[in-house]
Structures are given as structure tokens and as C-alpha cells.
Length: 310
Image 1 (cartoon, rainbow, N blue to C red):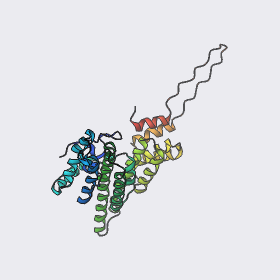
Image 2: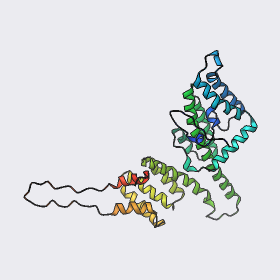
Image 3: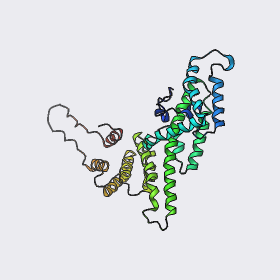
Image 4: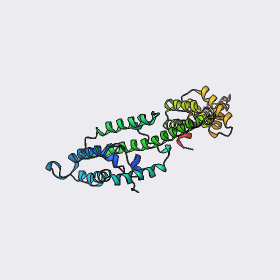
């Protein structure tokens, strides 16, 4: 098993696949499905800029360090079929321990999340890697920044590809069964719905209700009786200052699951009578009445709930 690795760039520390293992593909700027010729071409391009013997220039300590620690081991592994196969198998062992909760939150990953098929995902992944690798310019810091970005893309690609491959396998099995029951046909939907649900939760935690609402709506379109999705959609509507649909989804969540803590908490807060300030006593003194202390607003409690604060 390959040990944990980091790319010490200022943009990202120990991010993506490099958080769990050496990401040889990211440091060379090639996709996980690159051919041997593409690996060699990327390596030679980097060597022209970083290798201490290139262009007969004086040795640069930073370039020498990056070449010896990252570039040379990566090419040594990926250029040898046997070692590359062992390395790819090690990546799959790492992937088996992860879930969609490990999906990186990175701008480059957004283009992968919208893909619905393996073909779409593979094409989007290739384009993202090629575009980002073309921006590296091969200075030491730019190279490490590129590797940090691509390592996050690589992790997202592997996780999403596993999800879509599982869904495709379930659909193939459903087609092979004669006269499937209604319960068997939508067997692939929960995992798709769950992916939209988890993405919506990520947006809520980042205080982006406008992006969260479509995720939860798509989850409920695929799985209408998902109580937690109804509850989270209610929170998103509440955060977007739309109390009426928020209340409807809280009630729907409780009709599906009366013990749903999220819906119970916020519905009770919405329907609780608001405290009214006590009237100022009529006295002849010139003392100024003290305004009653106001409790934290409902919106602040919503944000605190999703940010994990008491």
C-alpha cells in the first residue's frame, strides 16, 4: 500500500486523493486512464522545465526536490505496466473505504456532479484534466498547485464513477428479469436520489439555499417519500425566507416519519407563539424602561444547526 502524500501548495494542503495515497497521475497532469504514450509525453514536458540537467542551467534546489520526490517516482510507477497495475489496485482499496461524503468541495468538481452516465462522466473528466494540466506552465509552485487541484478531481471521478457503475449494473439486472414487480423497477433510484440529497446538504452547510433547493427537489422527484429530504428542503426554504413551503415540507416529513428530529425542531420553532414585550408601567418617574431580551431568531438557529454549533 502506498503511504499518504500531500502536495504542499499554497492553494490546497493534503487534498483529494493525495490525502489518502500518492497521486502519481495528478503530479504528472494526466488522467487516470492515460495511455503509456500520454504518460511519457507529460513526463518529458515536465522534465524540460524541472530536471536539474536540462538546458545546462544551474541546479534549482526546489526543482530538484520536486523532481526527486514527486515526478521521478510517479513516472517510474506509471511507465511500468506491472507497477502501474499494482498501484491502480491500491487505489481501488483506498476507494473502497470512502463514501460520497468524501466528495471534494472544489470548483473543478462541479462539472462532474451533473453527469448522469458513465460516458458523460468520462468525457467531462478528460476535458477538466486536459484544461487544468494545460495551465501548469511547469514552474515548481504552479506544478504543485495543478497537482493539488487534479488530485481532488481524481477522487471525485473515482467516487462518482463507482456510483454510476453500480446504478448501471442494477438497471441491467432489472432488464434481465422477466415481469419485474413495481418495487423492483426503481431499485436504482435510491442511490441517485441519495446523491442529490447529500449534495443539497453540502450546499446547506455552505449557506447556499438557492443551490440546495433544486438538489432536494430532484431527490424527492426520484424518491418522494424521503422524510429527511423533505425536512432539509424545509430548512432550505426557511433560510430563503419562504416560510409557507418550509412549513409544508416539515409537516410532510413528519407524516412520513413522526420521529424526524429536524422537522420536529424547526416546525415547533415556527409555530411557537412569539414573545411580546411587556407594556411599560405608567409611573411618574423619569426612569427608562428596559427592553426585553430577545431570543436568537429562527434563521440563526437554522444556521447553527447545520454548522454544528450548539
